[in-house]
Length: 389
Ligand SMILES: Cc1cc2nc3c(=O)[nH]c(=O)nc-3n(C[C@H](O)[C@H](O)[C@H](O)COP(=O)(O)OP(=O)(O)OC[C@H]3O[C@@H](n4cnc5c(N)ncnc54)[C@H](O)[C@@H]3O)c2cc1C
Image 1 (cartoon, protein in one colour):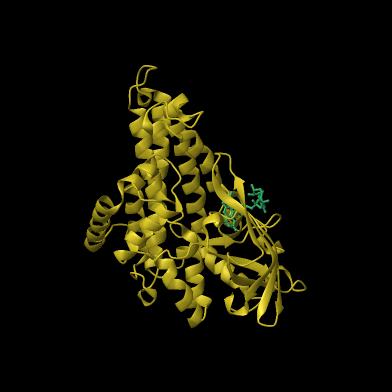
Image 2: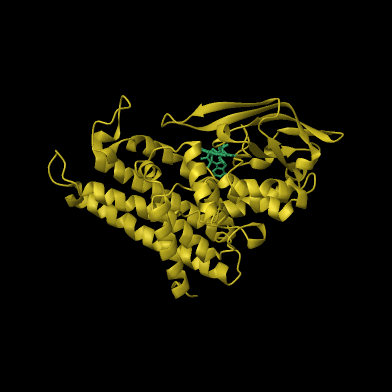
């Protein structure tokens, strides 16, 4: 196992760093730095900037217009983007539905959908979860009934991230209610402009509109939008979740935010000495830093195994649990460091700019241990696959 980066990988890292430093619009960098939500246009602008450089689909093979990077190059790319203050990539098109269409879609679907994901011409959202079908996804009830050349879809999805921006939604739907749970599910692409689709906002703890409920009432979907075989959607779903977990540890983001916590805590406050001189705070900071280094080594071990063509197994669950716990812990440190300035009570910024919105960000990040398969579910996977309980 070799955990060192090669000379070519170090050169690639320098190239990405330079690109992000020179090409990321300062207004976007500032928003990311201050934990603010980006607009749809800002996400699209950054995706187009990357695409123009040939880096629009970091995990994509060359055959579909990607750069054909190795897992290590993808890791370096995402880490440098995060360290340089670029927005977190929106995964639904690029990292979720695209690999499914590449693996299970037909040529017409690949030609129709993939290019517009790369150019950000079409925004995708993920329609998996339903009320009563989250961790137990196979109990989903949204129904699709085939009538001639169309499916008639009825049901409800929930927690749909940025569904209000989306042009398309990929959905798991039940096509055979008689079959055993996973067997009667299909993977369907639905145009969000179809009559009968309703998007309703869910406002989260931080006051933001990030997630939605989506309702389908007699929505007609052409059978051409079925990916893979009817009733074989669970295979696509499992394949997609494997991709969702790539780069899940969020090492770059955690490093960036930890550096921010350190900077904020080093500033002298009106309350007296900088917080970083407080032994309890300094010890917690060090503890998190050590955990982050350990996680980085674990991540590199997984990447090294991938380079030897060993698919990541339950290790992905370790990366998800530790990575999200660390990001949440760092947001707690930052909250502590900015103190009362964290809470702009009337929308105005009263304290230093770095303090604005920190409470909102702290609240927003509670989601990390829930979505993408909750951390409890990841622990179950580890118990079964590694501890063999
Ligand atoms: C901010 C946010 C964005 C999201 N975005 C999307 C999206 O874009 N598209 C989408 O399809 N979904 C999305 N989700 C949904 C997400 O995948 C689910 O919330 C998640 O899978 C958990 O399902 P649930 O909410 O139904 O909770 P439940 O499954 O009801 O779980 C409730 C609690 O019980 C625990 N639990 C459940 N089963 C077990 C078990 N067997 N053993 C131990 N503990 C268990 C869970 O860990 C959790 O703490 C999002 C969620 C959030 C919070």
